[in-house]
Image 1 (tube, rainbow, N blue to C red):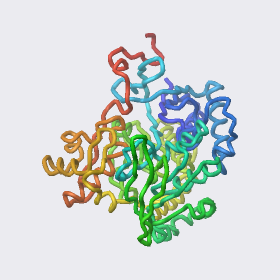
Image 2: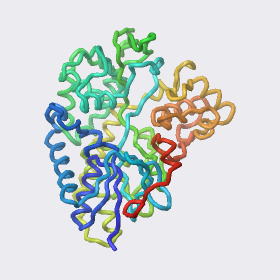
Image 3: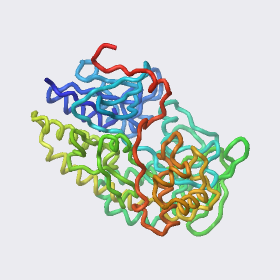
Image 4: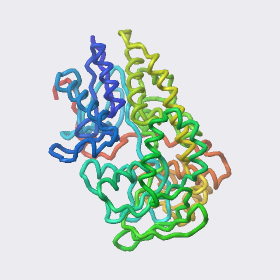
Amino acid sequence: MTARVAIVGAGPAGIRAAETLVGAGLKPVVIDEGARAGGQIYRRPPPGFTRPPETLYGSEAPKARALHALFDGLVESGKVEHLAQSAVLGIDADGLNVLRPEGRQVVPYDRLIVATGATDRLAPVPGWQAAGVYSLGATQIALKAQGVALGQRLVLAGSGPLLTLVATQLLKAGADVAAVLDTASLGDQAAGAAGLLARPALALRGVAMRARLGRLYHAGVTLERIENDARGVTAIRWTSASGVESRTECDMVGLGWHLRAETQLAGLAGCAFDYSETWAQWLPRSDRLGRAAEGVYLAGDGLRILGADGAEVTGRLAAIACLQDLGLNAPDPVADLKRLVTLERFAHGIARAFPWPAAHLRALPDATVVCRCEGVTAGELRSVADYGGAEANRVKSLGRTSMGRCQGRYCQLAGAELIAAHANIDTPAVGRLRDQAPVRPAPVGAWVNPARTAGRPD
């Protein structure tokens, strides 16, 4: 019998994995939350949207077009089964529990490739719970998918390449960007230059985008607080690298500090994790091809934070590993493994140039909301750690942090820094939150009503 391979995610990693499997004669099933393939970086607007790819993706438009056409062709030719607008909620002995528009469905599989990508990595700022505060990713999605800016006067703050990219995209679209506030100092950015030179053309492209921001861009800032009233954000207060205090009026703030790997499904699939000092987060453990557990392969930013080009490479490698383990003819991975070394060197340069603001998090005032979903403050987190011990799952159980809609995606990393500082321990000692289903919010009916099994009668 032909092995059934399921791929979760239809971004660059999932698309390249599907292409590689099809080349070996398999027909994978690709499950993705989006209505159309492309992932976050190459997200496609609804049909009939008039803005061209060059406007949506800039210099990456040819890559986006090629990936979209490749995947659409595989689906139209019947070589790939595509379950769109479908979220994997959990994994059990029968397969993947998938929430589809028509209800819950169980998708059985023999091998699983997890290419779930990443989300924004966020750091709390006093006042960030106000209406009008978004992540950089949400800001970019609104622009790509709907062609809108999420405010009349915008401030973007945080650090990493996405900060500069979203700012230039908004300016190009005609939005009023009042300031771009980078918590990374120019010294930090210079220290990462050696790694960034692993991909000189991409580094120069980033420098050119930065130059287009001109005097809007400020490096080495300290974010003090976001002011708001009953209607939402009114201003942000910040201190420059030279110590000058400023107040910038705005009605929207976009925040983001590079990326946080989306790892819940990898955890449910039995993968082990290690704490990455480079990325200040827990990342799955795998071999160089992406083998992470029995019959489970990882690819994309959910495994290694390497960006879109890295996702394509790791997607192919994961599929190659899968084919090897099935005893099927697989492409030679040598070229991709060599490319992986360059991509990792560049990624380490990014991490060095735009560091996670751990010191800021450890010194948050007690009144600062850390968990936006449940309204848990820094002071409450510290009190819970004193009462029940400085361990992530214990603090969650006793203090309700990470129990809301996001399930810790926005607050877990920041909370770990704060707890570690309060208990005078290293951040990895705080531990990692246990993964549990459903990994996405789901209606009660999805669990109460029997699930259909793919390929079998109801």
